[in-house]
Length: 108
Length: 108
DNA sequence: TGGATATTTTACTATATAAGCAAATACGCA
DNA sequence: TGCGTATTTGCTTATATAGTAAAATATCCA
Image (tube, rainbow over all chains, first blue to last red; front, side):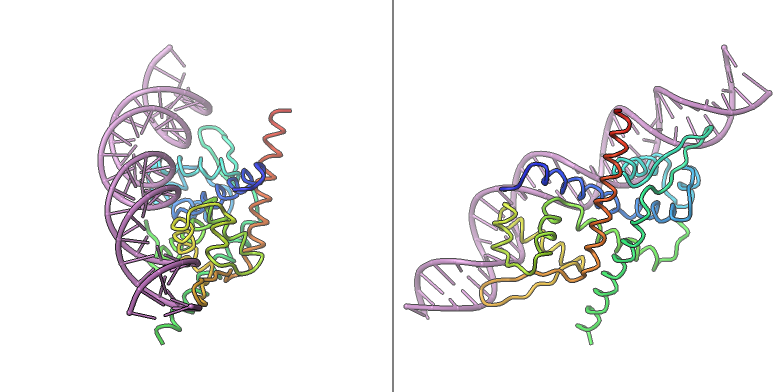
């Protein structure tokens, strides 16, 4: 409500980045790219989704600033742009571990 | 496609956590909680959204394992459950900085 | 018990997102 | 130039999500 305009935009941007990773297929694509750059055709095969879908998901990741693309010949190669995200993913895994552990505690 | 079932579930869970933070209002709520626990009524005022909306957003954060709630008297207090997320948010900010910088480079 | 406050749930509507297919574009090569 | 491959875009449909208002639940206090 009473928030500076810039700060609100900043939060919206941050949310957009997080949302970009908040989809199973995009997260899989992103994690696949941890192993190095990949062309769309390889990614589509690995992830097992249709070409158009993969292309669209990659464009969401790109618009969020998470990956870069590089067209070489007929192929477009994507690669991760900001390595610090890796730590982040580890943290998310900790969140899940944590949750699983306390769910187990409830059952016990 | 050819992915172990458990791994797929794990990715889906991770995506769910990321998605939970991938909404401006929820991210604001979360960042507000960085300052310590808050009751729903305070959060609703700070964030400037309706009570029901805030309540639902908090429940999304809770189901993702990001926050915990604690009912004391008439009020429900929420607090962050996994501190490592803070680093994470810093990283997201780096993503945006990075993007802004290269957008500027394009313009120049 | 009954009234007041805090919170959640429900129901409804509007909007956003995802998947799939077909068409369009871009590039390389004969 | 014209064909084949890689990728993106547009369109359609199904599903998911967000916001609002009203009702339901829970707790406190007189």
